[in-house]
Length: 308
Image 1 (cartoon, rainbow, N blue to C red):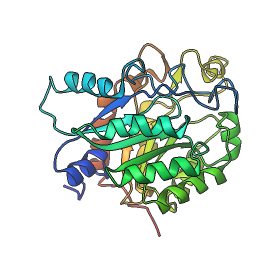
Image 2 (cartoon, rainbow, N blue to C red):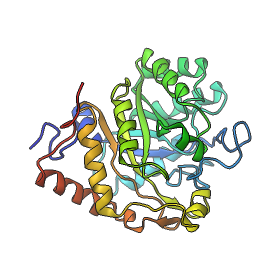
Image 3 (spheres, one colour):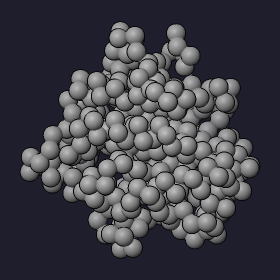
């Protein structure tokens, strides 16, 4: 038994139970927004790994109102088990890329729902104007607001390859401005980006250890049909991880991460109808079970190799 319950790392589930007193589920919402990396402001083709759904392949129908999206997902989730508390998660595309008046309308509608206990917003660090941060700060005083920033890597050469569209200093500035307003920050990283080795990935982990962030998502690189990344993969320009390789890398990352950092995602599972590689990634439960078994077998845990 670790201080994080049954898992050898500080899982999101553990944190939510500690904070809200019970298991909490996410409802994935769609605010109908685009992305500056798609509409021509920065680029038109998006990040190299991004599918047509824009990281929102599991999001609700944008044609529905926010309340209807929440209610429709609650009705499905609650059929399987009694659930009392939910997180409103705006996932698809860039969820602060709209006029502040519109953002206030949809975010307020989400947190006003009696079963919503927190608001989580996926966005880019270059889409956080002072006016938007002020809005988020105000909402954060009503219910917890978490901002999920798509960093993926600290390495500028990789960032150029994946067409991220902003330099690392923009990310640093966004984190500082959000934390000044006491808004929690979760950072998305991708493990296995072409051209990066284990040392490069651990440099990203080490960098984030020294940032004032509260959570991290460790996302396995997925090659999805219809993306520019898929074209490079089919040309043989890079390989994806085998399952055992990835589990070893995950353990390495977790051992180096700060013990207090909440692990919001440990692998991810892309849409099965779009996934080209690695195909084993679709068996998410199997991967998690193997990870937990290996870490217990090796008597290791998050933060074991972390040094201040």
